[in-house]
Structures are given as structure tokens and as C-alpha cells.
Length: 150
Image 1: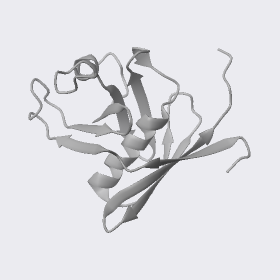
Image 2: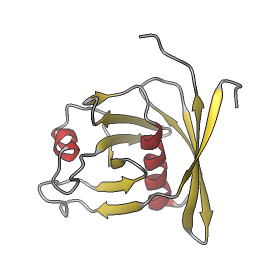
Image 3: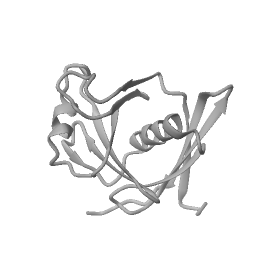
Image 4: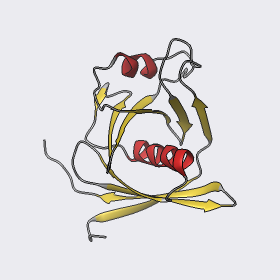
């Protein structure tokens, strides 16, 4: 990894809950909820914060503290966008959102424990999941620590 990258270790998610399409009140799409020190939901793309589901999930009653909403386009690469609570917009990148997207990918497909995700900033984030006996026991997030002036 380049010398300006930083590496942060995280514990396993505190909670992961899957809401199949139609099981979360008023929501017709598949939703994953994760607690990783902050509240996140992960939904499939498109990565468009104007989708009605984004604001609906951001303030959904099932998530009383509110939730960051991660949208994932999963074609040949994992492109992600996070609508962050407090900011109330899509941000350039979200580390805990990247962790949550990687966890959902692993839970869905069990194909890899190492993920490269591309946020709107275009600067990739790398997530490694640490698995023991088919359970996530920790996570590592790697990304650049470049300061943006804009």
C-alpha cells in the first residue's frame, strides 16, 4: 500500500440484520442494517441520493438514531456512495460505510474476505474481513489520508 495510506482495525459488527424486500415497513427493497459504532443500512444501487428509499431509510422508525444509507453498485467493481446523517448528503467517502458494504458482500456471496471499494472521491478503500469459524471476528480498513481542500 502507498505510504500515505492508513490502516485501522475494527472489531466485528455489533449487529447485522437483513430485511428481505417487503419485510421492513413501507420499504419494497432488500435492506441490510449494521451497527459498527455507527448505524448503517446497505442497499443495492443505483448510487443516487435522490431515490425516495434513501431519505425514507435515513429516517426510518426501525432505526431510531437514524442511519447512514450506503448504496452499492456491484458490477465488476464495488462502487459505493454513502448518504451520511448529519451531513445529509453523499460524502466523498465513508470508512464505516465501506466496512458495512464489505460485510454485506461477504454475507451474500462468501466469495472473498478482501474488498476494494470505490467511493465518489475515486480514491479506493480496502477492507479485509477477519473470519473465524464462519464468523466475522474483526475488520481492517485501509485508505489514503490525503486532505482535500475543497
